[in-house]
Length: 98
Image (cartoon, rainbow, N blue to C red; front, side, top):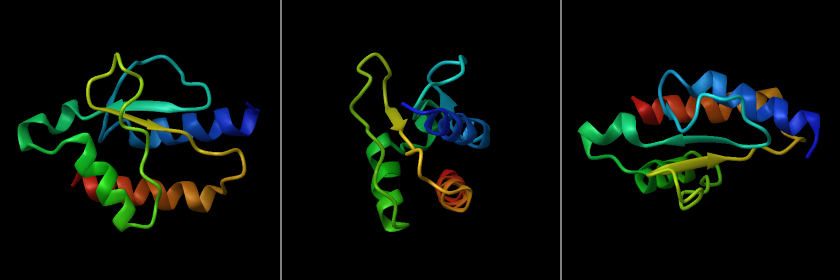
């Protein structure tokens, strides 16, 4: 794991924490984990969010791990991702949250 992967994960975490429920409030390492808790009142589940990300052209995040997080969305940005790509992912994720 490189510093860039850690930085990228924490960047996504910070940008998305207002729209998605964090699984933990500790800084993340190479992945950030959210849950679908903030969408429970709408009936939207993790799988719905993952499928919608595919519609935007992004690989779906891991949704079955970690097992201790109900409705987990584990996002693992690579160290080679550009800021532009990360921002496009954030924009898509925020649009989905709306």
